[in-house]
Image (cartoon, rainbow, N blue to C red; front, top):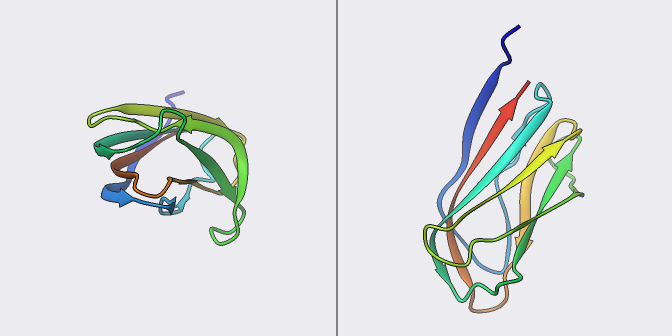
Length: 112
């Protein structure tokens, strides 16, 4: 049996400052997911800056899934987070300190 896969770009050239969250993505058909976070620009990103993977039953109300991903601290930096057992909807959320700014491309690779 051939597994199905799909990659969705959920943020493209978006600048994160302060509180941020990616667009929600419905992925109930998938059994595993990988978020790829690529920095196009990174200004004053602390070395300990992270984002949290969140899940939702409806794409409206969110809770932290438990997976944390380090944010890229330099332009062209790339990080990722793997997730399983997530139900219907996924996103990444976090908070950057005042003055920090990160322009990103975020892709979500899903596999059945």
